[in-house]
Image (cartoon, rainbow, N blue to C red):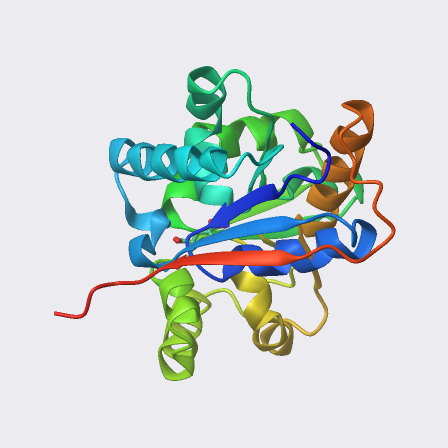
Length: 242
Ligand code: DGL
């Protein structure tokens, strides 16, 4: 294994590209192999077994390219599958993307709204994150954003607006001071959300992931020491049109 090998990264399409953008700010000389699994989007509405089989196949494909570590740039796949993937591929280093609940709590926001796919909201991990981080004077509201990631993946602005209108119907006057985007697709519509909640700070986990990647590369001594900008290779799966 050479330090010049790719870092593997995957998501159900374009969401993780925002994560990759953030990682490249501090690790520009690494080579990245990005797997955009648009064919299977949305992950957030899949049964656990199906999602695990999908992610397992992707991990095997990335390992065929000798990636030196794998970033799961997806909150849904991380909360549901990372434990099992770590057991199955015990020699592989995985870095996940967790809902940024800890960041919101550590920064002492009082009225926090967490937006995520239905699967992430219902996951055990989400509830563990809240139990471990929420202080007594903090309130956390969980919001299932059914179909939103898929509308973003399709770049269907009309559909995005309809979904936002519906999910925020009874939430506009709640004075949230922070909104956690716990799905890597949602930063694409940050401006739309900010417009609806102009006083809220909008948080995502991408900076945290990038710092973690740097730390793991350094502690495992697998950082690419090249002085030139690395390359990005993209593998994309597509839905078959019927
Ligand atoms: N981008 C993914 C996430 O962070 C999943 C979106 C989906 O496919 O449902 O949760």
